[in-house]
Length: 259
Image (cartoon, rainbow, N blue to C red; front, side, top):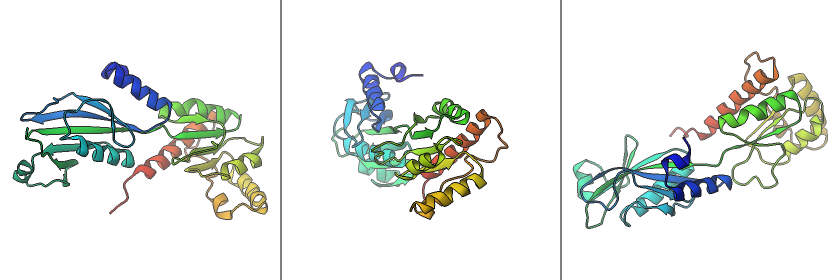
């Protein structure tokens, strides 16, 4: 299902434009109301990275602050948020207070005269993570072809300005410029670096890289051989094993830190 099938034209076009520019945003949808409220269930809004409503409508100012806070939290955590905005006496009757979170529901006070209750679902839409696949080997081609199916944005060279979301990098040169590709991959921040090749081959390359002054710890952090040990043989199987490891690394990075 595409955005245009579930959103108004304005919201769908704005969302697609933000996605094309690789800018984070969020959708807010009213899922439940009780008592008198200006907006009703199904009302939607598109929120910018700073929580500002760009398109759509969620009612008056009674919910705006709570929606903004929940949107910022959703974008920061990379996870949906559910917020219930209600008069404080009604919250107290339920045994909660503004700022509490119970069973995944955040609670916020509503000081508007209408005294209605509005439950809002906030869904973050983060830029696709960038996967840089360096090399023209069969394995590189198989990985580049498969990655978009798992929500990766593709590239073949390290970005000049990676920004706050460093890329994931796979060196699949396989004998054609291995050292230069590794130097490039180690020259800028990356969330993940892996080398397609045997551990013995990478050990030889590591010695050469260290002799040029690159930090041994950075070299040692490169995963070699790339991918989970699935017994992969063909380029397509190798690509699948690398994607499995990429997914594992990506999900671990998003996992909440144990408190």
